[in-house]
Length: 397
Ligand SMILES: Cc1ncc(COP(=O)(O)O)c(C=O)c1O
Image (cartoon, rainbow, N blue to C red):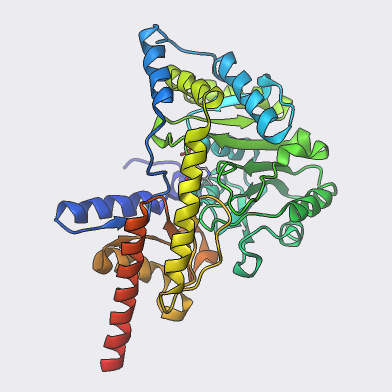
């Protein structure tokens, strides 16, 4: 009998991939499925970025790179952060990794162990809770509430910090809610964190370019008092429609960068070299493809909101960032999971149950509006028709 480590049984997963597999299986049976489940842009990577990778391969860049990434790419990241956020970052603090996920995994490996507590948003990206549990640390949920438009509440975070707290995970703009935490609330949080100097913060800013309604991004790196304990997580996946390239970065405090480097050497050696050259082209090349994609998401966001309000039983806080809406389904009387299954199997619309993002997601489903306006309208029309049919059935029964 094989005996695996107990920790592996504590590892969770991302239901979005299971829903995607089920949606594909239904499509293979000839069913029409509209996918509002998976969280990835429905755009292609801009051609000049693809060309940079092809050129790198043709130019013979086939070998390993330094574990933390090629210097030109780390310099381009530092320049991008200076340009977008006005923050000075030493390229030596930048660690190029295969996707945004790796920075969070490394941070959790670095800080998590039995006896430690790690605070994370709930509902939130499912990998946070999963990897905290894997590390042996105690996952401490920070509830994100509809009444706060799914922004972090500084009080809710600060009231749960203890002497056992080691790491705090923040995410704004947020998956799965589209919530954005206002600067004033972040200011209050940072002020309160002064009393907990042993707590590191990982700020997941992977959706930092996807903000709507004239909002501006507030980066945790912008707070001087916190600089020596902030790990910034960002990357190319969402911004440049590069989810399949596996390219992300972390900005680490100087003394943690060396530890992150050691993790990389032990884990993946370095990121695919051609992808790193593509990453440079993305950052220093034209930004209009990003602006056009974000403008398209904004338009779809408005369509989603308009369509949701016309479906009895659904209501939704207007998302302020990312490309997700998180409608409240409580009036339907169905649980989030029941709704996810029924919408996929019976209405032909893939969505994700709010509970896939933690127990505070009960009563909600996530709709990714990374799909065409036409498909979004059709999906909401199918959802509305399916819910109306349930009402009729209930009335007839
Ligand atoms: C909040 C958040 N952080 C990180 C990631 C991971 O991104 P990547 O695909 O680059 O690993 C995602 C992907 O969905 C996400 O939603």
